[in-house]
Image (cartoon, rainbow, N blue to C red; front, side):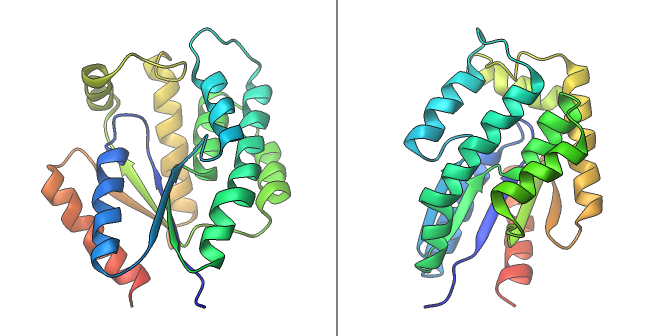
Amino acid sequence: MQQGKFITLEGIDGAGKSTHLTWLENFLNSKGIDVVTTREPGGTAFGEQLRALLLDPRQRMHAETETLLMFAARREHLDKIILPSLNRGDWVISDRFTDASFAYQGGGRGVSSDKLQILEQWVQGSFQPDLTLYFDVPIETARQRVQLVKAADRFEQEQDEFFRQVRAAYLQRAQQFPERIHLIDASQPLHVVAAALECIVQEVLFN
């Protein structure tokens, strides 16, 4: 049986990842592909419990504690959801993966890249997504979108400077891994973004 493909969606909250994840799932289904959708932190029962802690605005924790919890959830996610799904031939779409740790805990919290790389190697070895779609959007636009749909979680309550650092780290990752990470201007209308997504997925995964 052919191994499935692993696609990750990245970007700050308000970039439209959830909307485009649904579009991508439907697009792949139309190609006859079985798709598993998931998210980080979360995906497993254990991961969802950690997610509740990590996003709870009442929680205060050291940046490295936050980082370790993220990677703990990721280890379970890989073991219980991602790798078994890929091995049986399904494609997996995840709302965030390790690039988010380099952006949020690295760029936003200031955890050193060396420590993040050690955890990345420990938890996933050489395993990486087949394709990462990074949805880039101005901080102001993202905030306006989030405020329209829900109360802010622990990360969303951070100041604009935090998100500027997160965005800068994402852009740095995109420059570092251009073959894997494809940048999409998510401030454009939905149909324009969908057209860009279709071109990238066709070129990278179906050629």
